[in-house]
Amino acid sequence: MRPVLANLGFVLQLAGILILLPVAVAFYYGETDALISFFLTAIAFAFSGKTAAHLFAGHMELLPGMLCLPWVLWATDRVLKSPSLRRALTLGAVFCVTATMGSVQSLYWHALAVLCCVTVHSIGLAIKGDWTRAIRPTVYCAAGGLVFLLGAAAWWFPIGRQTLLLSARAG
Image 1 (cartoon, helix red, strand yellow):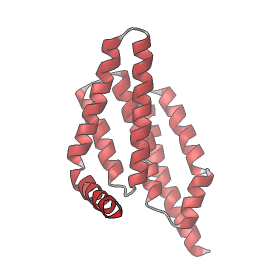
Image 2 (cartoon, helix red, strand yellow):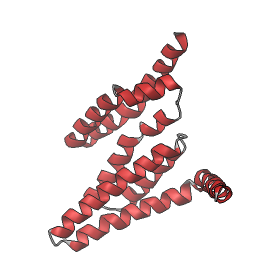
Image 3 (cartoon, rainbow, N blue to C red):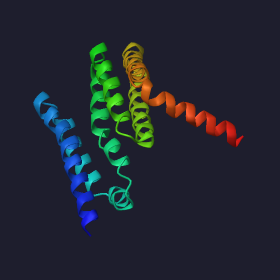
Image 4 (cartoon, rainbow, N blue to C red):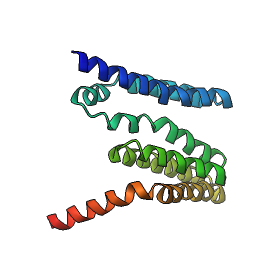
């Protein structure tokens, strides 16, 4: 029973740090919508069955990566609300930090979440006829992706190489 309690303590400490920091940042910037959504995300994630299943199965590398989701969504929201190069760099830096957490799968989920947010936002603005406001955030989010590709190349290049080698052997 002790290893389970030790793992649970580790996850709750890490979840507390990585989830409550975005709540504090949102409170500091006065973004009440983000504050409420971050808090609800933290509660839903901490008490979900998926978290418990990964915890009890010993998949500790997945949890820190998933705990970065509020950070990724926060950085994406800032780029979509007011696109700038600084905010694109922040988005790329958050992705670099997420990549170093150890879970490729959670990084793919984060990239998919960002892609969905950007697509829905851009389509909504394009339907209204505001093409310039639809394209600009997309370009800056792509710039954030480029920052990730350059900043975390030492992390993703060996993974991509190994994936290509394994797929070549299988075929």
